Length: 66
Length: 254
Image (cartoon, rainbow over all chains, first blue to last red):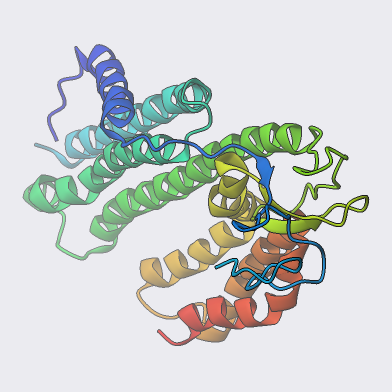
C-alpha cells in the first residue's frame, strides 16, 4: 500500500514515449498497395478481356489466359 | 494501525490508482492520433502502440486486487475488523467497485480511441476513392463504389473492357480495422450495461441478473454493432441474421 509518487509524472511520460517509439520501430512495414485499375491482357494477341467472357481463354484468339 | 488510519491509506491508494490511470489514458488519447497520422494511417503500428498502453493501464487496475490480497485485507483484520464482516466486505467492495469502474473506462477509452482513428481512416479513403479512375484501355472514367473496400471487376461502358479495381491497402483497412471500431462505438453503451449486469452478479455473489437477462442485453450490443457495420458496408446485410446468431451463441453457450 506504500506509494512513492514523487517522480511518477515524469516516468509516466517516458513510458508512454517508449511504448509509442517501440511500436513505431518494431512493427514490420509492408509495401502499401495503392488504389488503381488493371486489365488482364492476352499474352498472344494483346487483347483486353471484354465483358461477359471467361477468364480461361482469350475471346479473340483462343489463347489461354491462365 | 487503527481502522480509520487503515481506511484512509486504502482510500488514498485507490485515489492514486485512479489518478495515474486517468493521466496515462488522457496522454494516450492525445498522442495516438498523432502516431496514426505520422505513420500514414498504418493500423498495425497503431494497434501495437495501444496494446502497450492497454497493458500499462491493466497493470494499474490489477494492482487494486493484488494490494488488497497482499496487504490491505490483513491490515483491516489487524485493526480489529473481522474477516468477512460487513465492514470488511464494504472496504473490499470499494476496491472491486473502483476496479470495475476503471475497467469500464478502459473499454470506453479503447473504443473511443479506435473509433476516432477509424473515422480519420474512412475520411482519407473516401477522399482516395472519389478520385477519377480511368479504363486501362480507353481512358474513359469508370464508376467506383465508395462503400465497398475489396477488389472487384468494373466494366468500361465505352469499350467493354473488364478492369480489375484494386481499392488499395488503406481502403481494405476500412473493412479490417475501421468497421469493427465504429461498430463498437455505436454499441458501446449496451456493452457497458452488459458488463454492469455481470458485475452486479459478481458483487452480490449470486445471480441478481439471470442468464436470459444477460443474453438480452448482449443481443442489444450485437444488434447495434452489426447495424453500424451494415451502414458502412451494405453488403453485410445479407448475413445479418447469421452473424447475430453466431455472436450471441458465443455468450449463450458458455
